[in-house]
Amino acid sequence: MLPGRGIGSFAAGTRIAVPGGEVPVDQLALGDHVLTASGAVRPVRWIGRRSYAGHFIAGKLGTLPVLVQAEALGTGLPRRDLLLAPDHGLALDGVLIPVAALLNRTSIRQLTVMDAIEYVHLELDHPDLLLAEGVAAESFAPLTGRGMFQGADAADRDGEGRRARRGVALSVVPSGLDLPRLADGPAVQAVRARIAAQAALLPSPPAPAPAPSTALAGLLVQTGLPPRPVRPRGQGGRRRRALVLIDSLPETGNVNVLSHVGGLRRLGYQVALAPADRCIDSADPAAVSVLAEAGVECLGAPRHASLEDVLRQNGAGVELVTLYGAATARRYEALVRQHCPGALVMFATEALQHRGLEAQVESRPDLLGPAQAMRREELLAAYLCDVTLVTSDEDAATLRRMLPGLAVHVVPWEVSCANAPAAPCGNWGQAANGGILGVGMVGRFGHADALDAARWLARSVMPLVWQRHPGIELVLAADEAPEAVAGLAGPGVRIVRPEALDAAADGMAGLLGGMVRVMAAPLRFGAGVHRPVLDSLARCLPCVMSPASAEGLNLSGALLDLVSQGAAAKSEAIVDLHRDAARHAACAAAGFELVRRDWSAAAVDAALRLAVGTAASRRRSSH
Image (tube, rainbow, N blue to C red; front, side, top):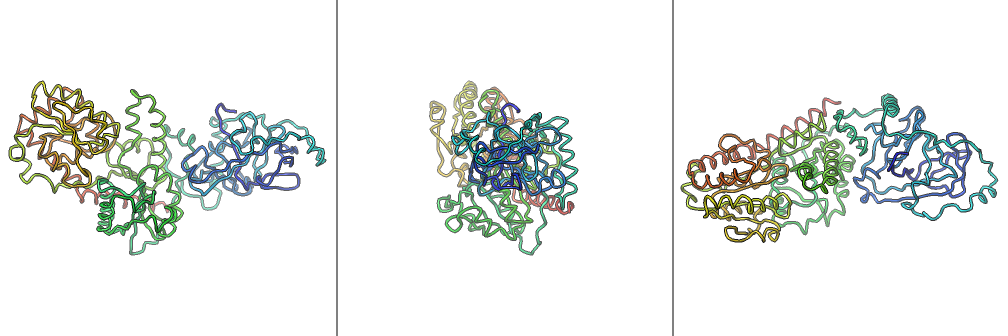
C-alpha cells in the first residue's frame, strides 16, 4: 500500500460475485461467502458503511465517486457501469491501481453532483480481490481502520461458527493482493494507454478536452478532475435566454456582476439571476430594485425551494449560463449541464484569489494550504466550464499557462464617469480643489490586503510625506470594518465611514472629492483589478499605486509614473502631486480618458460579444 492512502469502497448497488451468481454489495451480510478473482470462496468477516448527503460532499474530490463506464477496461469489463470511491484499487495488468489514477475524462470520470451516496466495503478473512461487475477490486484491508464506518464494532467474532453452520468448503489459496500498489509510473501509464484505446471503441465517445500542461498533469490525477464533455448545441430559437448564478444577490456595489448582466441584456439576452442562498427577501433592496428596473428577474425563495429547483423549472431553453465565483461553478456546473442542455456555460471571477494568497505565503506559511486549495478550486472551475471570464490580463495569463487551450477572455466592468468634476480634468487641479491638502484611501479593511495597505500607508509612507509637507492629511474611508483601522487615527490621520459608499455612484466623489487632492492604493499583495483605483481615476483624482494595485489597467504615459514599490517613492509622488499642478492635471486627464475608453459599456459589450462568439464558434467546429 502507498503511505497515507485512503479507504476504497463500493457504491451501494454494485454487484459482487458469489458462488452461483452476483449479489448487490449492500445486500450481503456477515458470514455470506463471496467469490474472489482467484476462484477462491471466502467469508465476509465485516461490512462497513458510509453514507453522505450530496451537499456535504459537493466538491470533495477525495470522496465523490468515480464512474467506470461499462466495458471501459475491456470487453465485458465491467459488465455494467461501476461506481467506486476514488481510492479503491483495481487489479489491472499485474498492478493494483487506485481508480482515481485512471481518470480520462471520457470512459472513467468522477461525478460531481448527486443527492446522496452510500459506500459499502467488505472485509474478508484475508485481504483478497473481489469481483465487482466482473472487475477485480480490492477488499477492505483492516490495517486501514474501521473507525470511519458505520457499525465499526460489528466485526464477525464467530466466523468459524458461521462457516460451519453454512457448510461451505473454503479454498485455501494465496491472497490476490501480492501486487504492487501504484498510482503512476510506466506500468500505470501502459494501463492508461490501453484504456484510452478501449475508449475509442465505445459508442459515441465525447471529444477529448485540450491536453493539460505537464505541470498540471499531476494535479488532474491527484484531484480526479471530472470530464468537460462537448455538449449538444441549443435549438437556436429566436428568444435568447441567459441565467446568472451567484452566491447571493449582489449589492449595488458589485459592479462586476451588475455590469455583466447589463452587457448580456444589451447583447439581446433575456436575463434572470438566481442566488445560491435563495435569500431574495433579505437581499439589498437597492440591488433588487436596480435589477427589476433593468428587466432582470430574480429567482429564489419563496417561489423556489433550491437552486436545483430554479434550474429544473427554468433551465429548458436557456442558451447561456454564467457561474459567478469558483465555489458556485464547482458546485453547480453539473446541475446546469443536466437542466440546461446545450447552454454555453461561463465561469466568471473578479480575481483569482489563489494568486493573492500565494503572494503572502513567504511571510504567512500557514496560508500555503489555503492557497493550494483555492488554486485547485479555481482551476477546476475554469476546466469544467466552456469559457472563463476574468478582469485582468495577469489572471488570464495565469490560466492560459496552467490550462493550455482554455477559452479565457478579459472582460472589464462599466465604471461611470458621470460624477467627474464639472470643470474639465485638465483644469481641475486649479479649478476644483487646488487648495486642498490630503491623500485618501478607500478600502474594505476586513480584507487582509486592504488592512495591510492602510497600516503600511499610515505608518511607513505618511511619516515621509510629513517630513516634506506637514499639512497633508491622510483620510481612510472605511467601507468595511472601520474598527480594524481605528487604531491608526491620530494627528494627520482621519478615519471616516461613508454611508453606502459602494451603493452610491457619487459616494466617493461626494465624500472624498472635497477632502483630498490625491488618492492612494498601496496594496502589497492581491490579484485582479482594484476597483478604488478606477473610481478615483473616473473622478479625476490621480491615484498613487503599487504594482499590485495597478494590475489589469494597462497604464501608459503620465499614469505609469504613479506606480512605485517603496515607501519613499510613494511619499515623493504624493507630495509632488500636491505641489505640481501641471503634473496633477496631466494625470487627472489621462486617468479619466483611460476609464472612459477601456471601462465603458461599449468596452464591456465588445469583450462579452467576443467571448460568447468565440466560444460558440469553437463548439460548432467540434461537431
